[in-house]
Length: 253
Image (cartoon, rainbow, N blue to C red; front, side):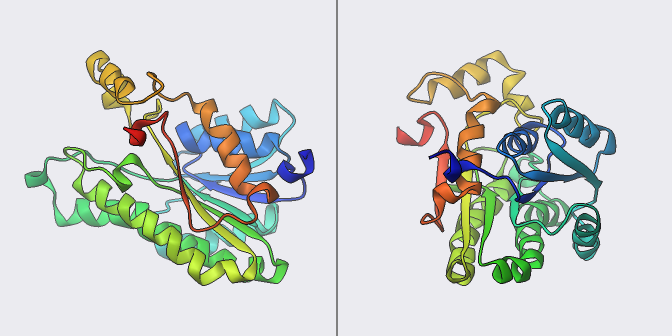
């Protein structure tokens, strides 16, 4: 049974891995044996992730990248290939939620949100598909959201992008799973991250979020570890095109 979840010999790219959910997933995959490439804009924060992984004897390398610049994505993949190898697991975790009232949304803020949350996961994943096809094996994990299914205030571009992520995941599966590439998404509930700081910094909003779950609590980052390893490993080989809600029962109500 343990071999189903063994990631030794695998190379995983996790974007947005400088903090929060991306960092937690990077640590989980490294613990399961994968060599992980962590990519984000903040070099110092990325190095903190690498050090956390190395302290538990994991293998990790940091790659500073502005993922919003889609023209630079091939350079990122080339850099990872030269130093670590070609990833056969990708976790598209980088994201942005500007939390603007609908009347304040600009063309620029709309485009920024849809680009980083929806376009980049597609274009970055597509760069790796050729090598995954050659291996006959690959795992793509997108990060969806409660807002893939539900509308929250002051988050219209974010909700649109995350609804798109759920459909993108199905479309990726339709296009690529015939080659042995599984494409799934994790939809987290409320976890303490930089994006959710406006909720967790407000005791009333934090308690409201907990009360919406059937478990009566908000998520802890370690609650994502098992799901991430499952979707990145052979344990999920016959699961594709799916969005798994890790939300304490928020969407069960």
